[in-house]
Length: 265
Image (cartoon, rainbow, N blue to C red; front, side, top):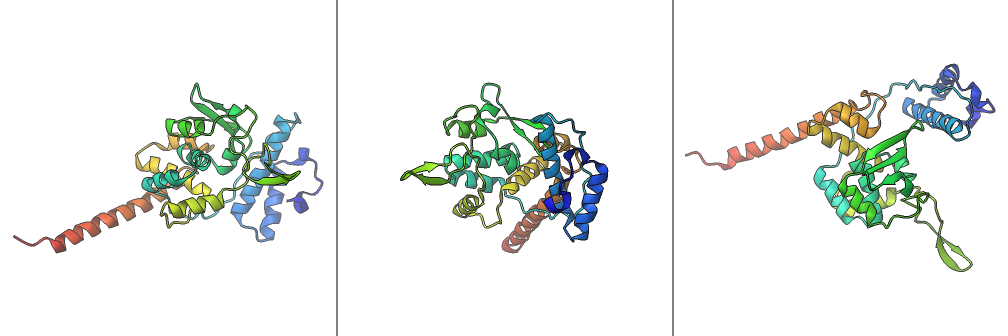
């Protein structure tokens, strides 16, 4: 992004600049999905400049480029339970943030104890774009978080587990957010007997699909996921359709087996 943006003042980041940015990146054969992600990163930075540094900046609405989104092979409810059951308390709480309230990993990373209201059962995070999102703290997640022994308000809930050696003593990096969970997630998935490719965002995909399959309306799922419109939420209707195909095939296969094994009277 630096080589394209250069030393352009942040006050010049407008719709015309956004168009030029897209054109330049497409000329470099960068896929539309990556370009969209880059634009969201930039607008997040602009929001931070406006909210934290009090710069007088006009909001820039991202006009997403179209791209083909592959349908994920989600985890079943049984696989979710198996994954949570094998996880250590730290990762159990983290996985439940990704699944039960549908947060992105980037939203979970910066969760602090001060963002959790155990009395009113709510918790908040900065979502994509920089605005605050408030979620309901369900009992499953609440109990998992309480097992971690809540710290001070400004402390991250999920600190980096990295260790350094200082003056001959092993110490943690302090109040630094966790950077990645891919290795541990893959390890826990194998221990849980899951053969699917598991990654952090898959837990968010899974809760959305599970709720939709239970006939929860799109608007409710949209609010849970923090989507600005129902358009990205409608993606999960395709996932559910794929699940229906699998479910009916299994049912028909069982029916066929019963036909062959049942002797005529």
